[in-house]
Length: 263
Image 1 (cartoon, rainbow, N blue to C red):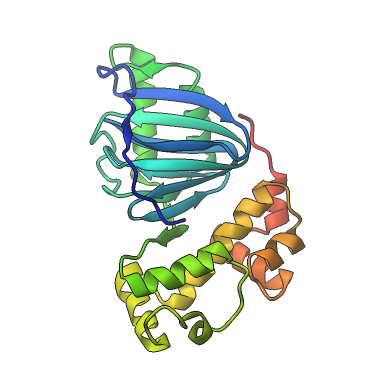
Image 2 (image 1 turned 90 degrees about the vertical axis):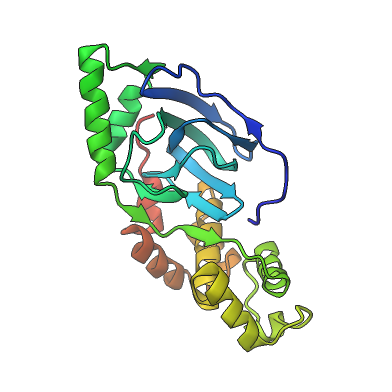
């Protein structure tokens, strides 16, 4: 999940005169969109499948019913878990003034979902066309009240914390105590805990919890059963995973992935 250094490709979003341009594309499981950036802000929504978006700041897992907000001109990659039906709105910079200038996962309300899907039946939306101007206004109004979701895994820069993070990312199901994981990192358990808190803005336990939840989501999107996803991601029992999933997304994994929105 740690973003490797690579040169990002500029990907122009098309008609610069329109407040909103769109992209509709379906991707096969495992497809990776290499590092690139845009001259517009983006709302990237998957009406089917799960995406993992990575930047130099961290990684975000974006399940169905959620979208990722990517401001211009942040370089990013996108990995697909399961078949992904991606629907993207490219917004003229600062059109959505209330959203932050950093990436985040956001809830997509039923109304916003329908607005995104409808907008994506057109290449662009122009204010010179009355009904399109109304559609743009409603989309912007919905973005003003959008809610953010804590599905981020922040990156780390300290070499010692980075060694621990890479060990866990390589094997999210690893259940060994932190003190044992720290061996070979060049720092003691207390130092690693302090570094995670300082650099990631969360405790080591919370960071590891996020890693496991995100890994389990990807496995479920690829067709894994709940029990398999839970144990592979490092949960002690399936019920512990279900409880954490419900806390983060408001429902059970089975109910969440059973729902297949129209695309």
